[in-house]
Image 1 (cartoon, rainbow, N blue to C red):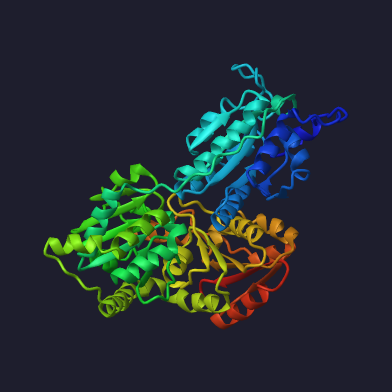
Image 2: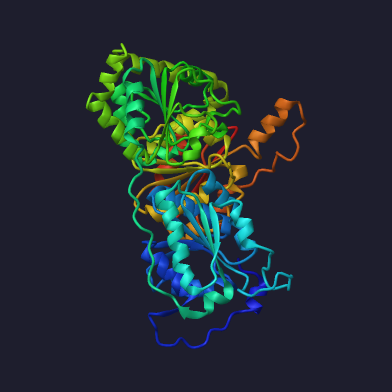
Length: 565
């Protein structure tokens, strides 16, 4: 984060000596390590203390996008990671800049996103007593350690490569979560022995032991009323999930992070419905539930009480702690989702599970017709429950869906139009992606996340969905989007404030306070930032405006006033 102080304190660089492959500055050692791990894109804002990093980005082939706020850089890198499956990298300077990105780090931790945040820190021998150095704070590492998986402060140039390799090893072998690397600002400029290039080793997919696999397969083989619950941890196993669901004739329900893992038009798909009382009641009556890559937490089921499942629970997760959190697993399968489901399918195909079931006196024949009928009825019950609340969004969501290509990327915010509207009702296929800030529930995610998604996939349609309250946490990123000159659509449902909190106050019998805002001309603001802006008063207008926005090389913000929706 730059400041008026930084322009006055500017760092001076001596003439660059001839390159020495064994001695590098800390900044070059860092960028070299990132390039060695295949990183080609970074997000961030240059400041006085991180300029040595920026000096080397281009030479090592790293493209860079500069959002207008560090939180935006974090959300953009988060979305880049979700879409590509490779870690997102964000660079900040010291102090306030690093704290600005902390909310994005917390969101990435909540949603298991491999985000790498890199910052300078106070000098190696900086005294613990405050000296008033620019951007000084007591401990950056302690601050980030509380929201990231780890924070690593290096103490030599040679250690930088090992710190980067440590982060990538975490991303590849454990539940992916954000990491922070801090490089003392004097070390960034120092030229020291850098050591060899260190890269994280490839990680073989972890698979549970054969006994556990056979135990789970036997349960599934004899299940009369099976169900699948899919979360974000199943993202790389969509094909295996669908194959298993069809083999078992088991309806599939997903969390927000699992949206569109299975084509939401598939006869067995309930879509994002885990919050529905009707679907929860149905789920508790299943004799076997296979939950893949989900915490089954309050943010998934929208209630603090665990689901009172009556049947057996099989959990598949890379994180061993999930086997005993919330709903403990009857059969814990700790491992990679795709590899574990492959092993389960093999056990079922070989008939080993069926033999076990028959020996126990159970013979079950999958009935897809019954399962399809059940799924249709459950979707209808879910929609009946929420129709008074959600109906006004549905025609607009249908208009959005009609404009989307099969592989479109949709980003969303913690807004009513998203969690009540788009998550359950915007039906997407498996080639599409929907990125939502679950769990941590941050505001302002949608727009910068859309910028990150577009950087990752410039040839795919990208649409951001938000409310006016959340959008204004990061609306300055319209300038970032305008600078990129690529089509990016932002659809904003405007209820002039914080609609969810207003409703909660009313439900408590409280007089609404600090939740009603004067309406801002958001379309004009988009034009002021260098994009386009318009207002849609009907679904037909939205469909037309969105179709144009998706082929116009600039951001287009489309406002849907609440009185229209």
